[in-house]
Image 1 (cartoon, helix red, strand yellow):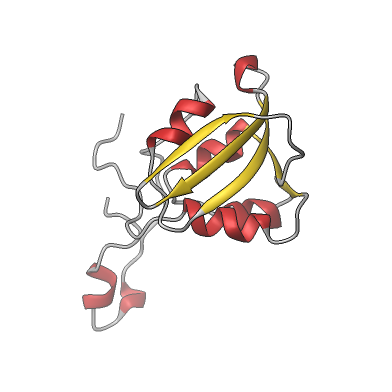
Image 2: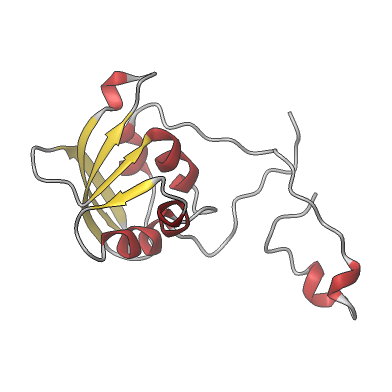
Length: 137
């Protein structure tokens, strides 16, 4: 029930002796793109336009300009061309920094329009501590 970056595996004489398996314990679904992306901090500067698709909450669908920085962020609608095209599922998965947009791109779930945008977004959405929830619900 430890987080992916728990130091336990590095304390073992034989790390292969630890048999960990992933469990579902922390799910996030962004319901207000502008507020959610504005509310967090980003460890690396970001200045990107995301085109988001969301069939369940159509108010999230559209293009969002995110300016993020370690000190804060601002995200608002825009009519600029997108740098990255993705669904709300992918944005939600990357929101806490546990899954990279680069990994989702490699799986065919994120489309990069501007070269280098996915690397910039992956770096910006990353976080030094892996998201983790000790409670199962």
